[in-house]
Amino acid sequence: MAKIISGKEVSAKVKNEVKEKTLELKNKGIEVGLAVVIVGDDPASRVYVNNKKKACEEVGFTSYEYALPAETTEAELLALVDKLNKDDKVNGILVQLPVPKHINETAVINAISPDKDVDAFHPVNVGKIMIGDYAFLPCTPAGVMELIDSTGVEIAGKSCVVIGRSNIVGKPMSMLLLHRSGTVTICHSKTKNLKEICANADILVAAVGRPNFVTGDMVKEGAVVIDVGINRLENGKLCGDVNYEEAEKKAAFITPVPGGVGPMTIAMLMKNTLTAAMIKNNLM
Ligand code: NDP
Image (cartoon, protein in one colour):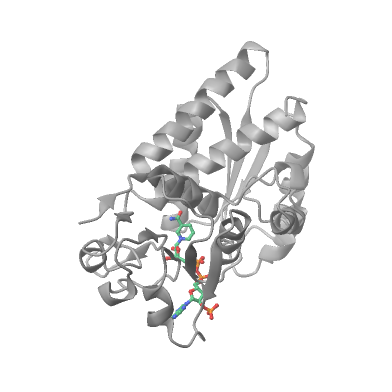
């Protein structure tokens, strides 16, 4: 039976570290501020934004929320981003994705100052991740790295398989594992022999967006299995990309859903915002 990797515990540790540093900054007269922008009323986005605001309170940041109506034009949103870029009180800017279809997501991401891009989606930060010289790590993959490290399992030289190649999860995830000298295979919808590839993984990261996609036969005995997926089933329950009951019989370590990667993403966002504030104040 696998040991459960608790995202709740690891994220609490990360947030505590951020909280302590934030207090140190406060004592120097420095406030840390995160602007969270949400356009429209997508219920899932609303939940994410509320969780981020709550995390800001926990660690002692000031959060500035901008809830804009769904009809907001691209020009209006870009004008707000420009204002926030220039606002000294704001260290990090987060525009909750997805934005409504009439707004060009890439234009919005590109408009955020790379120095305040705490999601690490701006091409400048994406490029830095590729080189391995980064200030901000993309939140979800960075959270996964913390979870793997919490197991004590060495990454170097291991066979690491990432299922998914999105810009926000799969690709940066693969890069972070590569920087730590994992031997990385990236799988996607066109991959042949996916089952065999996964079944050879010492570290398996699933970021597919399909409930119970990873079955027991795809898990190597003693593997570390990280489930990034968040899927809402018809009965309203949350479910990951990994068939937990099957996988946990073979894995050595496994993340649950919920309570695994999800809380880490927010904790890493807090860490990035603190980093932005420290860099701005020449403390890093
Ligand atoms: P995307 O839909 O952008 O990417 C999914 C990836 O899975 C694609 O690369 C796709 O391949 C691949 N894929 C789809 N079907 C198959 C298949 N049958 N076989 C192999 N690969 C397949 O999703 P995201 O990366 O944005 O998110 C992935 C999951 O992680 C979602 O459930 C999302 O909700 C969750 N998530 C969780 C976060 C958290 O904080 N825990 C944060 C972000 C995301 P191809 O490129 O060929 O189409």
